[in-house]
Length: 169
Image (cartoon, rainbow, N blue to C red; front, side, top):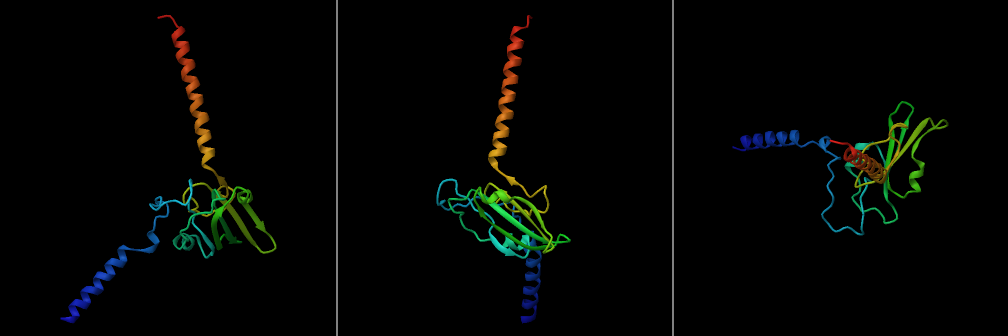
């Protein structure tokens, strides 16, 4: 009787482990916390110090509120000559901290460093790897562009309506 129960538990645990895998975590599906925020417009970032890779950093990131004097999330990616990650550091950052975005190649140590900053709840999911994605992304940049675009379309619509009103029918 003990053998069938043991066999059943072994098969059940094997099935459970095949369904629940660590590498299937969706880091893009971060929901805002339900607990009270410490101050208005507070946010969290993925936070780690010299993690071995991006997955390890995101998986074991410290879950804490960013200090009030910060507005952005920063990611620093150090990698070797052939693009292999040496380590990853992620943290909360101020506007001044984010002035160092971009990539730098250190000839004497044969490694490169790419830094990116972003604005928003846990927005620093990805690693910067080149000049294309080692950037400073702010929500304000998108909203002001949308506002400019929206106001341009409003002006075009009003001008078209005024011209249409002048046409004889």
